[in-house]
Amino acid sequence: LRETNILHGEVRLSPYVFYNSTTIDSNTRSRVSLLVRSSLHQSVLDLSDLCSSTAEYAGVAVRFGTQDTTIVSIYVGPGGTWDPDVLHQIQQRAKGELLLAGD
Image (cartoon, rainbow, N blue to C red; front, side, top):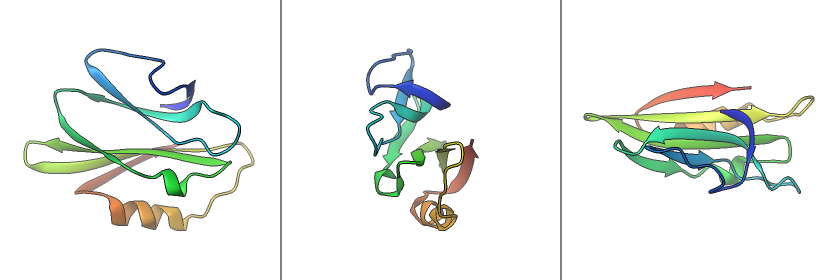
């Protein structure tokens, strides 16, 4: 989900776990969120060091059977700039297959 503008813990939706991006500027509300069914084995992918005032990332590794898949949601604000090398950094941190979705 992108442009969610929610605070950590503000929204709960059973049986899902929310993962939110880290905000850098004065906007304390996350612009990116991921929801993962709580029954799946999962671990957060810390991407907070990649976030900037114009780009935010949320990531989680999810195990499906014996296969890990990392899911990353990306938000780059209108007119915002970002370094495409971030994708390589995300790829190096990913566990198993990588799925990127963005706006």
